[in-house]
Amino acid sequence: MNSPDLDEIYREYIACLNSQDWQNLACFVSDEVVHNGRRLGLSGYRSMLVHDFEQIPDLHFSIHLLVCEPPHVAARLAFDCAPKGTFLGLDVNGRQVSFTENVFYRFQTGKITEVWSVIDKAAIEVQLKQ
Amino acid sequence: MNSPDLDEIYREYIACLNSQDWQNLACFVSDEVVHNGRRLGLSGYRSMLVHDFEQIPDLHFSIHLLVCEPPHVAARLAFDCAPKGTFLGLDVNGRQVSFTENVFYRFQTGKITEVWSVIDKAAIEVQLKQ
Image (tube, rainbow over all chains, first blue to last red; front, side, top):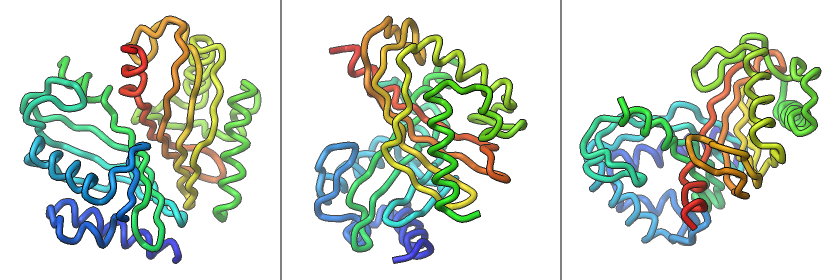
């Protein structure tokens, strides 16, 4: 698998999330996926995403930067959304906030098998204080 | 410039930081470097790092993951250290904490010209509550 392939698969994965096309999540995510050290598996990963969209009805993933070197993809994702209640332990309560997520993925046989994500919580805190 | 070159340059940059070899920082960092949207320039970037080592005497950068696709490098860095006082707005006060940083770099003519960094502040908060 070469780099352009992973790039394209990753963009299709993000389109899958943005359309909340949970039927097709298995095309992109391994049954045994691990997220930030927790073995969620496909069903746990899907539940996490469904919960995210419930809590953030206008959630939309935008790729700001994409760096591919098989078997890894690194993405800087940008968000501009209004989480309904508490988000990352912060009382956002429907305020519009902008933040980024820097996230790494390891792919195996074309599917995401491990994720290491960091969300810029400090950026949200600054906006809530304004 | 191909990917192995950037990989090697980046590892030398991290070695430069860990040895606090500020004389050689200019070999790796552009005069016009921008960090998280702020145009620090080389001197401002050096000042930021010197301040980090003052506040965190046992600071050490460990590369956990490295993804290179010129002109970008993405790194997941791991830290295990004891910040002296306040760190990221948290009263760490010399406690040993472990955390990660997911960071992207854009290189130009072999030097870092832009940095997008997110530190896992939430991970530190969890440890401080224990």
